[in-house]
Image (cartoon, rainbow, N blue to C red):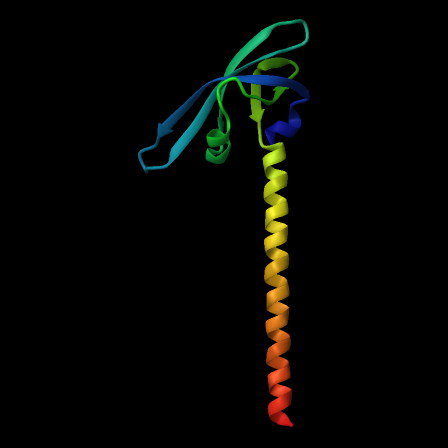
Length: 118
């Protein structure tokens, strides 16, 4: 939700990937990055991201950074635009396939009941 409140936009550059394992066995995935704000000031920061995004990103890749205009040190990496479109399309196709097969099976069961009744 914070990303929608930040009006600043910049292109960030990944400099390092970090992983921290929590006591419960789950992991937290971090990236170090830098970006330039208007005026040429360079901001370096660290942010946590989803594991799938962490796996996909490589050092020197770029990603969208959203930041607070009044305090650029408050920033969030926003990643996954094209990846999420592919995911949405895949889920749509799989859903359509399951829907078609489910409807075919339902129609076959009605046809079998009608033929037994006759």
